[in-house]
Amino acid sequence: MLVRDRPRLLFVAPRFLFPTDSGGKIRTTDILRGMKGGRFEIVLASPAPDNIAPFESEIESVCDRFEGWSEPARGALFPVTRMRHLLSSLPVAVATDRSATGKAAVGSLLAEKPDVVVVDFPHTAVLLPHRIDCPSVLFTHNVEAEIFERHVDLAGDGLRRGVWRDQSRKMVRFEGEACRRFDTVVAVSDRDGEVLTRRYGLKDVATIPTGVDLNRFPFRPSEDHAGKRVVFVGSMDWRANIDAMEFFMADVWPRVAAARPEATMAVVGRNPPPALVEEAKRRGLAWTFTGFVDDVRDHVYDAQVYVVPIRIGSGTRIKVFEAMAMGSPLVSTTVGVEGLPIADETHYLCADDAEGFAAAVIALLDDPNRRLVLATAARHYVEENFSSERVAQIFEDICARTFERAKAA
Image (cartoon, rainbow, N blue to C red; front, side):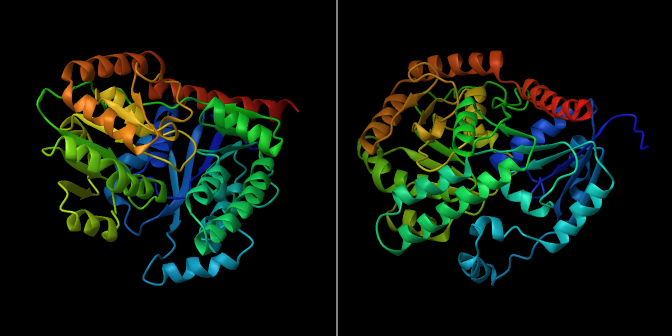
């Protein structure tokens, strides 16, 4: 019989976690970092670049052992590959992540008989055998089908809408089948947990709150009371963020710029689409696209208002709590703060249409006292309730409960 000092937890991620340049990566690394040295020996498995030496310290901070496999090539023909996957029975996003190399690597690690396996995101389940012979946890950062359904709602008519409807149907089937394979499903909000339970008839859905590293994001409200700078933070190769900036540029910003011509905008995040950058230039907008940055904090601290004009998505957005922790006054759509238990007019300003969103941004740009009141209340709220250490402890408890329940059966 295999005896270990601590139970072994195999954590399978769909992407190499470093640099932490997306909300999903940030959430996962914060949890693993909080669990490191705790009840489990953590083995992290994911695709990896050929040279991981620059990331060794980050890897060591989140796991006891790392096992990687070659990342799938995403060269010039990658869009063609994605187009071919439209004919697959799986959603394109899932079919693209299938990897014989990854499946073999995960199979070898499962053969070492971990005490519990955690799979990060439902589409990563394509790398595991259909039957999982150890206690298992699926970590869902979103309700994936809901994202696709919102794409359908915003796609208009014609071919684009038909493609999204087809992908949505495939994702509903895949997500339900994937969730039912695991002993425990973890959702990132009570709202997501209820949706997953209702949609897919799941028996054990646990929830964790969204957390933020309060030491990494200290409270520092803007002292430039006359400033008129707005900021958005998000990976700009993620369709929900692209849609948000398209909406903000076309419908919201003209109202802001007409009222406050001196206002400027910073879009902070990797891989901004060239078409969006060119459109900003064509319109003569005072917009800056940073591309990838090692640290978003200075860009946030330099702004007077932080915007989250998200219309597509699910799960919760870590960037909301990061902004609140830093003292950046927030304007968001309902979808942008979905699943987060925060209050309009107390912790942020909510607006779903272009006119209302612009009015909220202008109101905060014009009123430094109101900005400070919102920022102070928001920071106090996340300090009291949403530290990343607390969230990691809750996640570890869920994994331990799944392991102990299986051991007792």
